[in-house]
Image 1 (cartoon, rainbow over the protein chains, first blue to last red):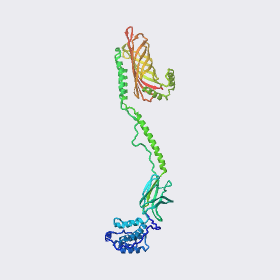
Image 2: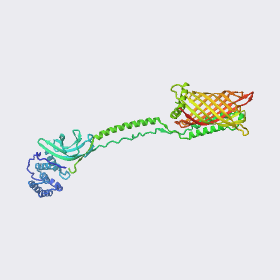
Image 3: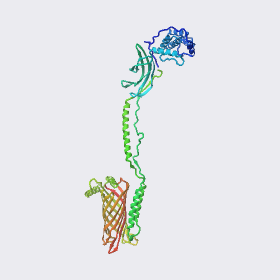
Image 4: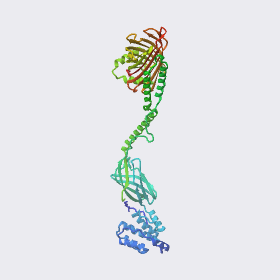
Length: 356
Length: 231
């Protein structure tokens, strides 16, 4: 994350106050375990001041840090020197100077915060007091998000140290657009942004989010980079079936039917019996025609009864299938219409730049 | 629509494309002259059959058996149904010690009127001539009875008939009381095909007397053939 503190209008107005005559013993005892975080400073005076502070030699620490600040220091060294001075003055009970030094530190590095576990609450309170006296923007963060343009939002996080008007601006890739401007109270704030410019999705590319806090003539600006990618929106597949509504077989094979054999036996028996009963006694003898007819008739009927019946249509299933088909057809028409819309849209993938 | 009507329609469709247009149109013209009501499904069937018959007259020893061929046409007009047939049979004595074969030519016509579902009242006339003359009786008989048909499955129909023979005539003279005629038949074939196999059985008993002497006549036959639906 890049920070570009503005020094045009330093918010902190620090008035020096006479140093305290004595250091409270109890505070000195508590600071036996205090060690300021080591930074990558190269300046030897700053390093000596840091070492003197760690060894509880606060007089030397203050002198060395003051002397270091007269030199041409890097930003990191300057932050470390102000930090040593701020906490040293705090320990030496010179609150005004402590707040002034810590204010300078916050202006240079708004993200630098006291270790509340290691520092006494009094020094943390001095840090908070200093934070309330300067106007800075910190805690910038762009959440990673992927959504269809127009249907989702990306959340932007930021924080101002004092009540101020915060203006959010997106810059880069030919775009310079203010996306939000609102009075913001101290503390974490967030803004959900649709990543659209006048209704169109933000073009793919690298951008910077600039958050400018204004309070009277004071102004502070923080920025963070993020990238935008475009991709096609997934289309919905057409349905081949309705879940839970499978098609039913439109025909069913009825059970074996012995009716043909039964009726044939009955009628053949009736005719054959009558033919036998009505036979003239003068003509007894073989009844070849009757026997052959009965045999062929009964054999045919038996074969018809043993034969697997032909499948027959099931009207209820046919109507049900027609309903399912029509519903499926309507649903697919809706999906096709949705896909036409989806092909016009674009999926935005927003990701904060690594190392920002 | 009952099963017989359905089958008629199916057969009419199946036979519509076959090269029997002249027969079909002639039959339809006849059917139209016959007064079939407009809109009533009509069907015409032609049958060709092989015949095996037994003819008994007077004594069992005089029994004649033989084979022949028959052809028939049947017009189904729904409530009304009319059929006519001709047959030729060559018969020989069943007894081995008898000589002389007889050739019969016969014909008949029957009309049916459906009185309840597939139960019809049937009225018919059958006649037969023998060659050589007097080798057997020439017969003429009127039949009045009932005909009942039923569909066994989509593949087969079965019908039975029973009739009284209130009137009969013989070229050798004599008279007869009321005779009996029985019959049954089976038609089997695919429901959409024009052709179907046909089995028919017929039985006739006429108790003829000549000068108070019993000279009974009994005819029994089986026919197996095919039926073609013209329309």
